[in-house]
Amino acid sequence: MIIQETASLITQDGIRLDADIYRPDTEEKLPVLLMRQPYGRAIASTVVYAHPKWYAQQGYIVVIQDVRGRGTSEGKFKLFTNEIEDGLDTINWVANLPNSNGQVGMYGFSYQGLTQVYAASSRPKALKTICPAMMSYDLYRDWAYEGGAFCLYANLGWAIQIAAETARLKGDKTAYNSLYQASRNLPFFDPIPASPEVLKIHDSDSFYHQWLAHNQPDEYWQNLSPKLDNLDLPMLHIGGWFDTYLRGTINFYQEMVKRSSSPQYLIVGPWAHLPWGRKVGSVNYGLTASSFIDNLQIQWFDTFLKGKENPIFNQNQVCLFEMGSQEWRQFQQWPSSPSQIYYLSTNGLANLREDAGILTPNCPENSQEDIFVHDPWRPVPALGGHAMYPTGSFDRSSLDCRSDIVTYTSEPLSQDLHLAGDLAVEIYCTADQPTFDLSAVLSEVKPDGSVYNFSQGYQRITTINFNTNNDFSQDENINSYQIKLQPTCIKIPQNHCLRLSISGACFPAYPVNSGTEKPLNQTHLIEYKIITLTIHSGGNFSSKIISSYTK
Image (cartoon, rainbow, N blue to C red):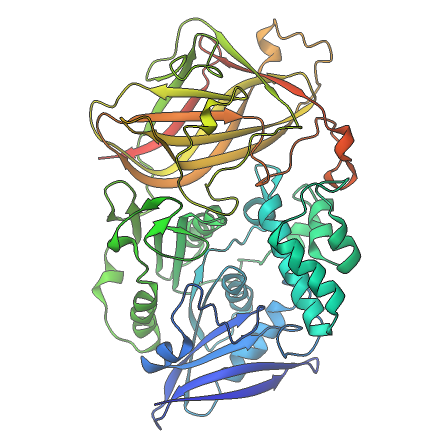
């Protein structure tokens, strides 16, 4: 039998924080599992995790708390600002609950993942381990922006959700209804596209406005991001190949491996931000892809909160789902295998014919170029990937037929290709405007001609000393740009092909580049410019894909 009750603590500055507590009906002293979240504690992140009652049935006291200013907790919610002090107060409180043995672990994903890191940074004695999932500690690089581009779809959708919850708590029906409607059809086409009126009117204090204004990794982001100096705990890191914050998960894991003397374990499945199931996008990865994270977390907590031995955490520290083979693969560390390089080659028509652009293991001797035009009236739309909904892998063969997308495709593979780890594209590119974007998508081309994306990346580029005369006849005027792609683990079978697709937009995952260098929150729709881009390859311009491969 599980007993459920509601209890409160008073923080050091006098704010009441409410929590639901789930406990087995026993007098035995038990460890505590804590989740702190901003969406209403009744949800308890059951969009991806088992219900707290299930966790309590495994022999734990489970506490699900509304953070400050959310749910029924008092105070004003200010994104991330109070999570260090409130997290410390909460851990000290739950460690002394009736029947608690004083040992505390935390779990949760997204915002709930980050509340763990904030709390752990204060080094509370009772906190013994955390399980952060799908989060980032570098809030500029791996949360709000990607490659210098604002993550429009993710940030706007989240800001409207947070604003709607604030309106609901205030009982403001007009604001709530307006924001609810906006959440069902995100407002990307206001006069200032990146700065919608609905947020200006109904949530003028939203973090969204600050994130737009701080478009560089300045002091604002340094102050907001959690500090890692004092972190040294066993951590179970959880990510998904199509999760928006996978870069943050991987970077945090690697940073903790460097800093911490405690065990660090990483698992990445073929999942989106939510749910964590066997099918993502239009691809079914099989029963082995279904989430077993709840059971894994209990094994982890049993190890570090109950002292039970579990051999799986004493072996390889990285567990990755390999798409294509639909198998889980074990690595001693994050894979950094020898690089597999594919060079771009073309006859100049790679935006018009799928057989014109080629991926080849050898750099062509002569320089070549593909020219395509980005038109803000009809920007290249996002399809799947990690940066907007629906996420995942889809057949993009029709999308690749657009003349504002250049594609480069390998010959059919002579043997299976296994890619695992980091991916990047290095592109030599010129444009007729001082600022432009590059979107890169890697896909698997099947023998029937279907094309399924598995990794992508985005880069916003502002040209230093822009050549106003468009004179690119001199090699020194042609620069290379690196686009970091979403890490991956995939098997591409023999006789299938690898494809790189490049465009000047991926909307509305990221804002359309106006070509004007004006800040996003000041650029009107009417000011957006047509941008002509040229991809250079061959000769001195070794545009290429850089990937890690395994056997």
